[in-house]
Amino acid sequence: MTQKIDSLILSVPAVSPNISIEEVGEYFLKDEFKALLSIPVVEAGKPVGVVSRYQMMNIFIKLYGRELHGRKPVSRIMNVHPVTVSSDQSMEEASRYITRNIGFPITEDFIIVDDGGAYTGVGVVLDLLKAMEHQLVKHGKELSVAYNELKSSQAQLIQSEKMASLGQMVAGVAHEINTPLGYVRNNVELFRENQRQLSGLLGAHGLLLDALHAEDPDDELIMERLAQIKKWHRLDGQETETLFDDTFFGIDQIAELVASLKNFSRVDQAMADNISINECLDTTLKIAHNTLKQKVTVVRDYGSLPAIRCMPSKLNQVFLNLVTNSAQAIDENGKLLIKTFTKDSFLFVVVEDDGRGIPEDVLPQIFDPFYTTKPVGQGTGLGLAISHQIVEEHGGAIRVSSRVGVGTRFVIRLPLDGAPAQHTLVAGG
Ligand SMILES: Nc1ncnc2c1ncn2[C@@H]1O[C@H](COP(=O)(O)OP(=O)(O)OP(=O)(O)O)[C@@H](O)[C@H]1O
Ligand SMILES: [Mg+2]
Image (cartoon, rainbow, N blue to C red; front, top):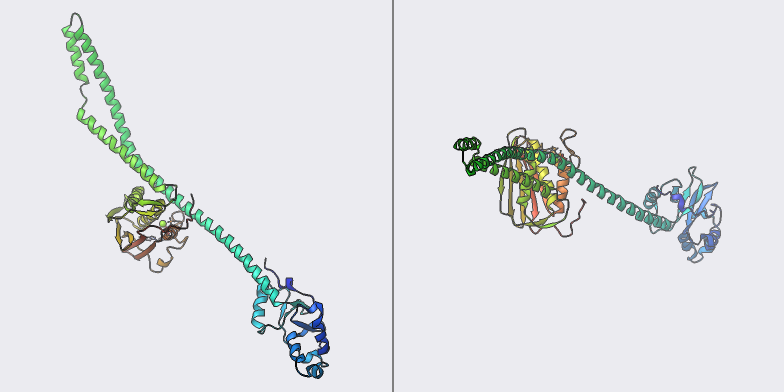
């Protein structure tokens, strides 16, 4: 929708090259030329020059200027190279051409011709400036609309990347929960079996009591019932105690996993005070346990960190992505080091693996959105792009160093005095 230069055409009459300078002087005084700096000169329908008010003034203010030059044809003084643009040019094209070719100070208007080169009118530089300014304002508005749209689609990307990684992790955690759930269930089966025996025993005790309390106790019956009680006496008190311990341990494990899921995915994206980054890392490792346990030995080297102000669920997302990337870079029996410490006014989190490493020529691209070396369906290539953005929102930085065949180290630096107060929250929900 670019505007054409023809919207600026003023269809003023032109003069012929033979007309006298004196007559042109009269023209300049007419109403229809009042707004113009110059008058076009046209011959056989085509522009051949332009004569400006400024030139006229130069002649008329000289002593005897009018008498000496007034009767000469205007062709003697006109500028034979007027700035000419074609009416089908866009405003931008035309204005570029005009600014390059017009003389300064500006003493002339520009001439507009049709596609056959025939004179159609003139345009005033000031009008062009106004029109351009108008377009700039409009473009500015369009730009800001586009920017806002981009921002919200970025938020959606973050959200969907989060959902994807969460989906994966939830599957892993469900699997983790299954193990304790399995043996808790087994133990409960055993309790039910014990319970049956206990009821049998109580029943036999009742019968024995009846026999004992009879008016005329029958020794034989008493002996028989005692024997029955012995039969039920296979319950082992110690074993039952262990069963209870195991069951509670299992239930605690389940509760812990559920708590880390809740911590991890806290839907509120809000800034929170007093967050322990070491605890965030533990939560993340618990969530990622299923991905790691087969092939990765995790070494935690946590320093003592003060609690900071941050968005924990977002930082968890960053940590999970780094840990997952490391796990994916390790083929078998790898090591993952998670180290935290403080230095000056910063807190550092190091995530280091001894996996495949990243080739030097790839390294500059890994933070680009959609850059991935993983097969279709395994990686979206958004993990690091989003991690980078989240760390920046926290006023921090993320750096990487890597050597092929040796391993990769990511270092996150966060300010100890917390994220900047006026953080720009991109992600919603
Ligand atoms: N620890 C690492 N070791 C080796 N390569 C890595 C490591 N971390 C990242 N990379 C490389 O950087 C690329 C980009 O990582 P990023 O996390 O942005 O996307 P992804 O893991 O491919 O996909 P997604 O995170 O969306 O599932 C990866 O495809 C991989 O090639
Ligand atoms: Mg990733």
